[in-house]
Length: 387
Image (cartoon, rainbow, N blue to C red):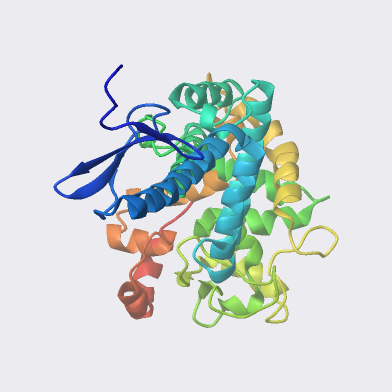
């Protein structure tokens, strides 16, 4: 007759356990049998109590394993995207992230979902660094710029990491992909000759006379297109010869009416005399937008950009040929004025600290506090621009 097993397996609802006693206390060993993969102290020397605690332990470990398996098997790309957007949406509502940034997350994740579907990738637990690299290669093939590709990959890694942290994916899930920070820019920087040609052509378009003023403003302020479109007459101080780029993030206004700057701070710029001469004759009510389209409506950036390309960039492109269409004059858009303004001002000797203030790259509230006291000095540098 075979000897009785010293530590027989005890079958519970989920797993088989070895129950043994050490130093007077019972322990449960799950590293054999159906193998939940760990060993636990039950903290009692009473056999019946140990059995009761073992069954509770079995239930707890079993439920956890089921949850991990369900997460790994069934977290579809769409469900994962929806979950992540759901936890980030409150951040956009309380100001932790900009609504525009949140909308960018949504668009990128929708694009990512479409790509995964086209490749037969169904769930987030299938995602690894190879999948992300292939997606980056597809974005490159589609003509996406390096900074855009970097932002896509960073978001995917961020979503995956958050899912793992919140136990939506198995704890050992990771995307081992190092992303190098994108240096420099592929935005074309207009030369003085190109800026001059653009302004001359815009001024000569008698069928669209409204095109000239906003383009002149872009050239002589370095404003972002969103900042330019958001300008109101009340933001312009004609007597003081300056304009204010307002951030209203702290104000409780109706959705869509709040103006933001990228830095989250209001800044002030001197107005060049050439721009002042164009704006003074057409100034309107303080709450009205400064720049209007041909129908007297507030500029629509997309419509404005399409007209700019069709009526100005394309006709002038043969005059400024380039071997690389993606980085030459033909690729220039509104942001190219900002690059040109920054380059021109730097070449004229504008102090670096002042350039940060003019471009809106300064986060210091103290610097902004002292800005007005130096507006005359700053104006002397802006006045040097002559395209």
